[in-house]
Image (tube, rainbow, N blue to C red):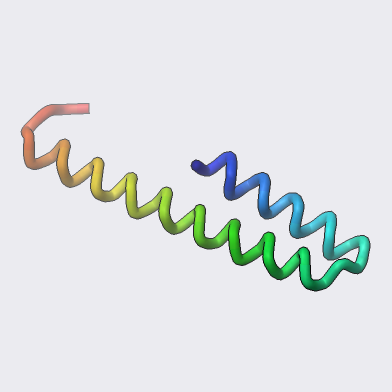
Length: 56
């Protein structure tokens, strides 16, 4: 998931440099959403693993 966030961030940066404001804004928004979804899934996984009692 982090690779998708990085991908959208790079697309946004390239679009911003080339002057495509709408595309850059959309790509930044998608990158933020994917990043926070990845963080949420990581936290849920960590809590579930801690509840089960399994070590890393």
